[in-house]
Amino acid sequence: MVVAYLDHAAATSVRPEVLEAVGPLLDTLAANPTATHAEGRAARHVLDDAREEVAELCGAIPGGVVFTGGGTEADNLAVTGVVRACGIEAPQVLVSAIEHKAVLEPAQHLARRGEAELALLGVNGEGLVDLHALAASLGPSTALVSVMTANNELGTIQPIVQIAAAIANRAPHAVLHTDAVQAAPWLDLCTAARGADLVTLSGHKLGGLKGVGALVLRRRVPLEPLIVGGAQELGLRSGTQDVLGAVSLAVALRCAVADRDHEVERVRALRRELWQRLEHDLGAQVHQTVPSAPSLPGHLHLSVLGVDAEELLVALDRAGVCASGGSSCASGALEANHVLEAIALPPTLRKGAIRLTLGRTTTAAEVEAGARAIVEVVRRLQAA
Ligand code: PLP
Figure 1 (cartoon, rainbow, N blue to C red):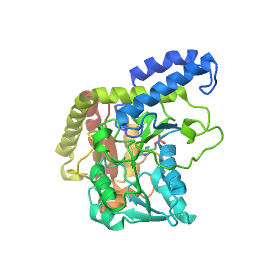
Figure 2 (figure 1 turned 45 degrees about the horizontal axis):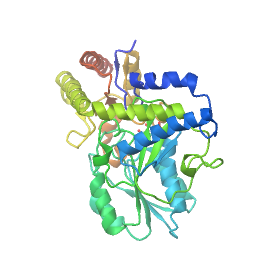
Figure 3 (figure 1 turned 90 degrees about the vertical axis):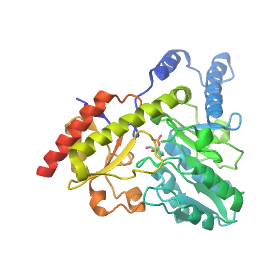
Figure 4 (figure 1 turned 180 degrees about the vertical axis):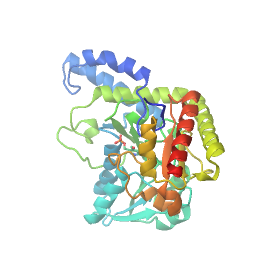
């Protein structure tokens, strides 16, 4: 039995409004949205409405949304697509050291193949990008800068507006991409990610369906597609579109925007409550990783002293608490964590580091039960 689901950053449940919107379409939208007959046009109309809605909510150029098979694909399209289309002889890619692997790996792949020179931007102890290092690295060969709006593990929010200003000063030809997969449920991307040219979204972090994402285009940027063969999605992502996925993303985003002010306050208060309970019962045995950085309301990254994170997560799972060791994308395996290395978290804290993330369905009762279960498990493991 699940006592507390504290892994909303990995995936959050589908919103009822999404189910309401998508359910009837399962029956009625049989046609291919590229077909020219009436049924096809009806499907395309639904898809185009979803596109316009996402475009408007994210400050895109009209129609400037490429629906993809998830956040990972949108990140890959941004990184590889910009580098391959930029026309710079030896393009340089600047990427923060704490990016999701969906950004880091395509950048590393391009570097290994000699298609780009990769420079990692360092971060401070709370995960904030070093703006001086960024400014010093920008130059005529910079093709792409990719810095996430908020980090998936720590929740730290990056100063995207300042990063965009530095790029405008020193490398105005460069493209700024931001992975807003984690930020989208909580922040207004038109302000928090103002100045970014390309923005990545993912459906299942917002309460939409899994397996749908989007790359939002804020200006016309040369991009080479990763998937060719039908020229759908502005010619940037071939293949018959997932209309229901696109609708789910648009509805989920609309609902997140409508609920945002209230939800941010509510979830932030619950996170505070969770931390206070853990700190009260475990004292110096728990350590908050980024206590004072600007951060997403639902993220609580912490270290438990004297326990091993992997063991802790298994024991928490048995006690009905769903938590995570960081990125959810390594099939549950805990690998050397590049984010914790980048913020230079001491090895003693790294060993017992876990991520608890709250979300739309989190309640006060769940926080109370979750905190109690975590305390019991930690005490048991420490005693052993
Ligand atoms: N970017 C960030 C910051 C994420 O947290 C994730 C998923 O955890 C992704 C990208 C990948 O998104 P998707 O699961 O839709 O491929």
